[in-house]
Image 1 (cartoon, rainbow, N blue to C red):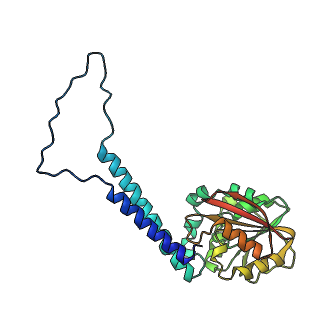
Image 2 (cartoon, rainbow, N blue to C red):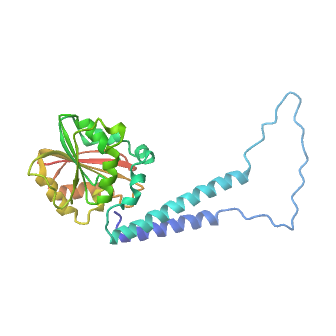
Length: 271
């Protein structure tokens, strides 16, 4: 997450950019001065008039709308980041449908996250902060009948939503997924019992991340994987360097970073 001083700099820079753009706009012609008459020139026979061009008003309107969208996005990011900097809480259960929506899966495709996380058949996998289960079923199908997936969340409302999802006809093939109520600070698993732990836009929601990483190290097998995925519009989005630094400080070795600024996954290994 941005430090407070960086957020202030971002606001100042944004204001300066918009001020410069506004100052460069051409002044409107005075109403008192009539427009100059232009003599119409008829095109030569057999030749087309190719002097038509887009109306300046349409172009100006397009950039005005674009700047408005950019302003709304920046304000949204600044306000929510300031709020989340001082108040840490998990995503509320009432936005479960939004978290488990086609829009989210288009921005963070499930098969892409499964591939980046290193999930394979036969693995014992834990998802911390499963929410309403946007990606849980994909990981469960990847683990297969010989594997096991645990969907852990601290909120009963979210666990009810994922339980309802598993009862739907399209998910009746999943028999190796277990829903677990619990905290990232006290994972209900034995020492060195899991092959993979993954979190999708969840890690930064945990107030004491060092404590959570200590638990992750405890329950992971030797050379077990921790995969942390982030998405830029999320109000808790951190830079890749921040996620890498936190993982290393938690005693994990960096294995790989995949993706881009918009959507990335950092994969760690337990030494």
